[in-house]
Length: 204
Image (cartoon, helix red, strand yellow):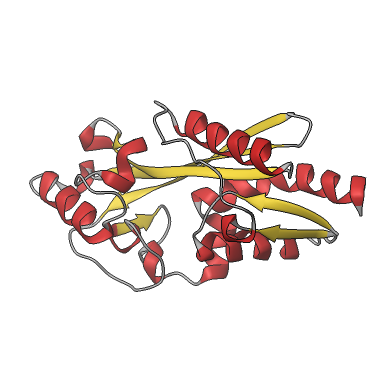
């Protein structure tokens, strides 16, 4: 069994990658999170792009543990805010990871923007760095619109105010399986599946 480190402490992201690999029929890989390996210094996310941040996180993790490492950096790009908050999505309101404050601030900032100009996209960059230093970086985008009031309880971050293209429900109203199939991170992780299958084949 080959171990692959997903450089996160977010249990939902671990479950998501495990589900995607299972759905793709990839066996021989055990996905573990940062809680399963000895602690190492994690560099702050200072990159100007999702790709730079994801790659830095994966490279740090691979170097520190000797395991193939996957990391993602994702966020929301809002057309009316010139594609912000972007890489600042998790700390848009100042503190890191205060979902409600970030969401409230964003809704306030586009309060006067008419419905037809409330386009947005969730973006995810996922990086895979193997033990030999080989790097793969992929990107997934999930276009949609920002609504005016929160709906739904499945998900986190900006999910309750984001309605994906072709949907009437917010991403917080979709099931986990529906999100895997369509979400920005789901789309990016799907692109990593062939590379993870290769790792499983090399070892398992």
